[in-house]
Length: 106
Image (cartoon, rainbow, N blue to C red):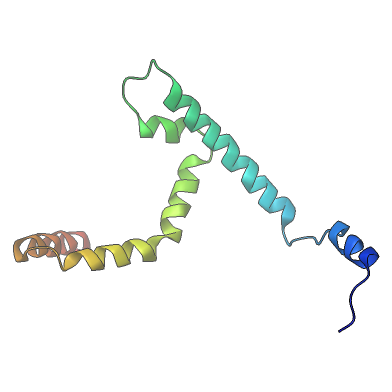
């Protein structure tokens, strides 16, 4: 098999292949960095005696929306975890859950 020359290898290493929506992804990364920094700053504040998640959502722009989107994206995983754990519950626990589900529908 013919080998690539060293010059060709160097050229391909230096060539940047643009990814689709790179600017959008970079903006998302910057938003996540900003939100993470805000949360860590809050958590590291020694004057806070309790962690107030509601305050974090209210005071960190975009965090509540990101969390909602994250939960929706992981909905199937959550459903699978619940289904797997149902086998470990007693009949009484299952009836309570059924009543709760019926209450939500009604």
